[in-house]
Length: 105
Image (cartoon, rainbow, N blue to C red; front, side, top):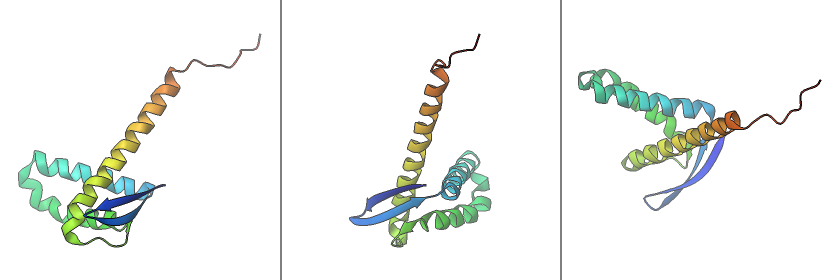
């Protein structure tokens, strides 16, 4: 779980990202890609995008108003992407580290 304090449009918010919320953020990114790659599919995925955004925004206290929702979602996506990059970097470092265990003879 990730907790973070955000400031959006001069107002402070407390964000709690659970694994479920992170999954929703990744789903939203996928929906955005689908809508971007195939503009004709936008109508089909727009309701799902809206629903996913509402679910993600529920991870923030206090409740945010609609005019600042886009900025909030952008910030959350940045946080999730940064965390994913950090995890990827750590796993790559673990793979590169030589084993320090001594073998028995």
